[in-house]
Length: 179
Ligand SMILES: [Zn+2]
Image (cartoon, rainbow, N blue to C red; front, side):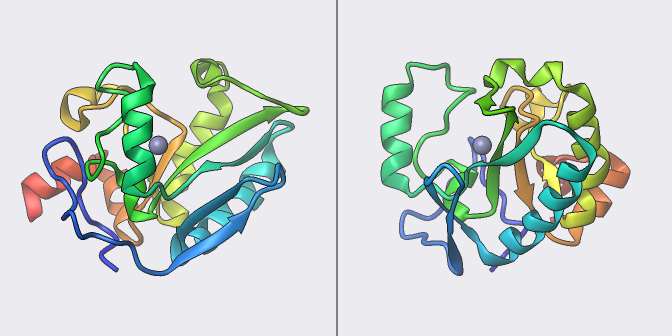
């Protein structure tokens, strides 16, 4: 598995791409999600640690999305192109990307309310790399990533995460410089 694979609006996955080593995960709300098993193992540690810090509950919302469900999302979304990727242009198809949820008591907050949870975002910004994750679509990098700020979207990149964090680089910038 290539943990640093670049998938964005200019770099599609091969149309025969199928992620390996997916793990089936049953969430507390009974939803089933799939994630790459190494990414998941590290995400569990992250979630354990972040949930010790906050009274809100931080959980997995979505993980792997196959091309077909990505197509449905894209067609149904009615959202701007910077919100939902076309099939084969979404990182979620690799099994390495995860969207998180914040629950306040039993209520899940809306994505638009994430910015009110600055301390949680700061924790993710400062610590996600210790678990091999990056905030894939950071603030002030929309022109590079092609996506608006999405603090809930984490991407597993393994050891590279610390380097990207240290130099404040997106995956796109890393590819431009080093690949
Ligand atoms: Zn996402």
